[in-house]
Length: 67
Image (cartoon, rainbow, N blue to C red; front, side):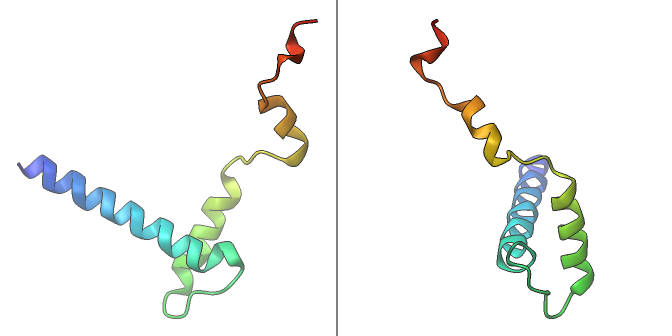
């Protein structure tokens, strides 16, 4: 039972961090009461790899691969 409670608290904390990131640093705004948290989330987001526009073609599954 304790493991379930700890897991649920962890899930809620991660979900809250995602909501905070989307609400402020993702839009380029500063967080009003905890600017250190916004800076930390912004730095973490800069380190995550993203798919660039020219890489979208690599992900499309079309019938062109049978030449």
